Image (cartoon, rainbow, N blue to C red):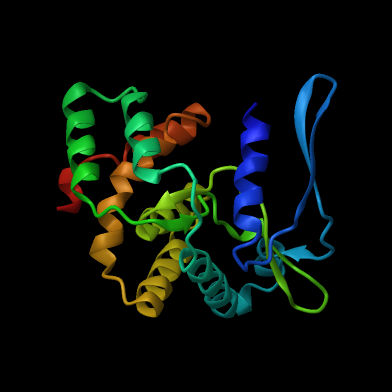
Length: 217
């Protein structure tokens, strides 16, 4: 059923003007739901970064441009980002006081309706031989505040021990979008708590270390 819903989300964003491999079929294979999508030939932006670290600024510039293109879209009937995060915070192992502080912080932040990818990382961008960028893996797409999506990407870089790249990425995004860095940082404990519900023990421990809202006042 999760794959079925993912296919529905992906189909909703396909026609919003972004380069997305189209869903060919949502079907069951050996009793499990699967999504068949259009094949896109190319290499991931992550591989390009790994192979040419001297071009990291250029690649991050492209990466941010693509994310801003996503945020510029609005697609009806997507799940609401804030509702999803409220639910996830309630599922964490955090104490009641911390959960209350996170719920309160989340409720106070603006309610937007921008398309948020939910897992926007360089490995989910494919560059074709003719330099066309395709964005894949729309399983976590929601409608909400773009800064939450940025906080998610920032934390993913940090999880992979790439704090320097995370900071470069955040600086580039904030400059290009004219967003105050402090505004994105307000989302960090909320997004970290939400993401801590899944993943291995090491990742949970790392993410939970970001959940003190006082650090970001």
